[in-house]
Length: 278
Image (tube, rainbow, N blue to C red; front, side):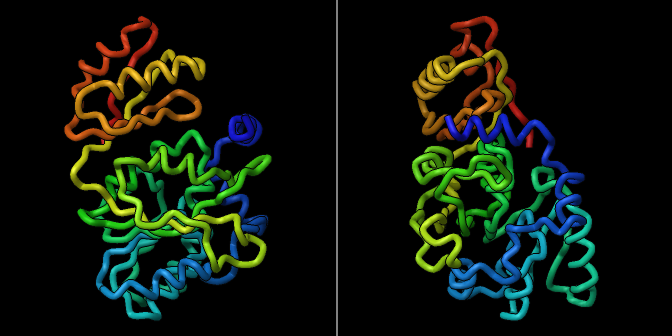
């Protein structure tokens, strides 16, 4: 599979702070448009509440945040794992009280936001982290919160960036979010025309979204068997297992007790499951 090949080729090195810092130092930042992406700018122009709590993860040079500040938004948080862009932004906005600039790991970040803007962050993460991404986004969004922005609608031979498809994304986000939009972007920049999906996903606050560590699964057949068994549990709405079989995202009407999950997967004694805490 092309996405698995992507992961094998490109994820043998950690995409950590040192990796991203090296890209900024070498100025190999081809993802940086030098401006707000047109589809995101058009969306931000529709947001009326200037006091909305807005988060931009993997912010980089964050033209989006600069644009929002110019439009009068007063509660913006941006986060990046690389020191260089964070340092630049802290200097640039040192006298502006309407923006909080965080150096750190998005997956350790805490807070509640009305809107999270997705611009190049999802595609910069290894595909093995997509379940964790859905879990964390659901956790950070306030009730009725929105995740909006762009995802690639194409594959890459290697990455980052890493691609995907609408069908894949729908499976990951199903039940945890209500889909307002997930369509081909009509106003992408020319080099990305027809290769981006614009998404607007509303948090489903009526469900529990939990992430678990998995051990013992080694193949697609095992993954499908476990997925079907967990889906058969009363109240479970969606199950998504990571491409390296290490984590499973479970969306349910009520949280499923870990003991129940353990009983369900005991079809093979090598399978284990453990909840990941927030």
